[in-house]
Image 1 (cartoon, rainbow, N blue to C red):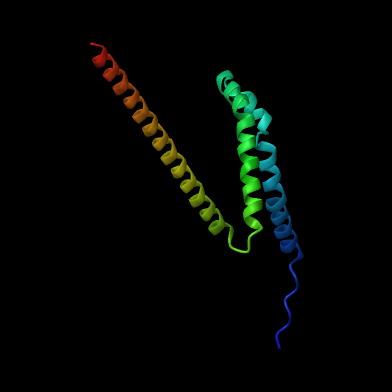
Image 2 (image 1 turned 30 degrees about the vertical axis):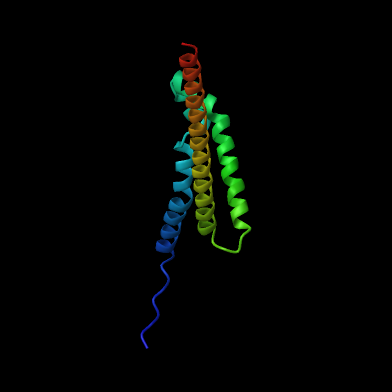
Length: 128
């Protein structure tokens, strides 16, 4: 049996140091270089800052609604995407029903207005 090679501690030390520099130093450098949200906001022009502040509450409410829907969907035994798809279908159907009701109501109002107009015309013709 040939003699066993000695462990090259110098090479292992260099490799460990390089690995640590890459694994710890890389993310640390990214965190150091990346701007915070406040710094990004301060770099916006005044119009963008104004719009961002105005729409902040709306975006926060939309996010909260989204999270609440996800929590509701996760209570089901079925996969979330299927439950979300069913909810979207129900929303579409309810919107379509609402649109149909509005159309029917407008049509009814138009018919009533037309009937009223015809009655007035008959009254005017009867008086002449």
